[in-house]
Length: 80
Image (cartoon, rainbow, N blue to C red):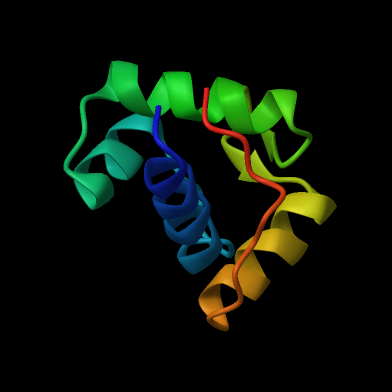
């Protein structure tokens, strides 16, 4: 999983923060397979940025996603 894919997942979750997200809606948003999105969610969960089971950003994930949306470079993401 590339760093840019992880950022894209965060961005999609951030954009849909007020609505329920599903694996299939994220996969459609990102033009990825559900399996690829699930792997990205697990990687982001390992970093404390996402609750993969609920497909929601954590508070830390929200902060990182907001920074990404504002155009900041985020050094904390680790590609899986």
